[in-house]
Amino acid sequence: MRKRRKSALAAALGMVSILVMSVFTGPSAWAHGAFMQPGARTFLCWKDGLTSTGEIKPKNPACAAAVDQSGANSLYNWFAVLRSDGAGRTRGFVPDGQLCSGGNTNYSGFDLPNANWPVTHLTSGANFNFRYNKWAAHPGWFYLYVTKDGWDPTKPLTWDEMETDPFLVADHPADTGPTGSVDGYYYWSGNLPANKTGRHIIYSVWKRSDSNETFYGCSDVVFDGGNGEVTGVGDTSGGGGGTTVPCTATFKTISSWSGGYQAEVTVSNPGTTTLNGWTVSWIVPSGQTINSLWNGTLTMNGDLATVRNVDYNRNVAVGASTTFGLVANGTASTPSLSCTSP
Image (cartoon, rainbow, N blue to C red):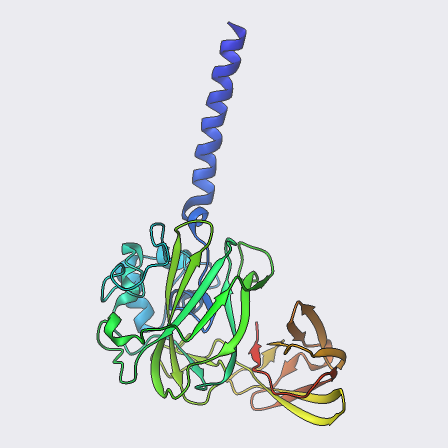
């Protein structure tokens, strides 16, 4: 009798544990990631809607319309645009007009045609540091597609408006940071599609190699000579206002010699408020190593270089700039830089 009571008690406790896990983990237990650079619609709308109280109240009109249709949970779980039965499928599986949600009805608001989605400014054909959040880490491949010339953001996105082949495939890329936060992400460097101008969508498909689960996402971009700046976040007018990357960074070779070079990076503030801290990151090309760096704090994670401000150059006034320098081994080149500020 005691054994039966113990077994019944254990079973009851086990059921309580399952219920507690269900309450406290909620939808995040099955959510896994989204593009951060260039930002997916769900990610940038989440940033646009952040408030000091933790509520999600988008100011961008396209983001607000998406939440009106799909609910606030679509932004609290901005990393969950997935199909468990996807198996990497695209055309013939995800219906026309539902590409950005991957056919997941919980995110149908992000399929809405709208010219006001937040956009990332890029340079066609340039090398770019891609960054994809890994809310939960999985092995797999990333396939990146782009829209054809003449795509109209005010009309539903269809497969006929996408280039047939991906312009870039990333095979099990490197990763950094803890899972379950925006600090954890996959990263890789690659060339953006060439000969593109104006508004486009970069469409991402993350196919897991250990299951059929597949993640889909739309990143609105404009090829106008930009270097990853984002507009339309924190701006009530939509596509022309505030930035989520309120700093820019430029790389300049000061001198070079056989087997090495010296470079200077300028961090500028084109925004409307003083920067209170900044971070610059880039993929160090194969064959190069950074020997020394000044006016910043360097962290290396594989081939990802991250430089953060020091105390005396933390604050950068509106319209002003600061610099840091470095000496490296290898042949001088000009990498694509990402600049962010808290």
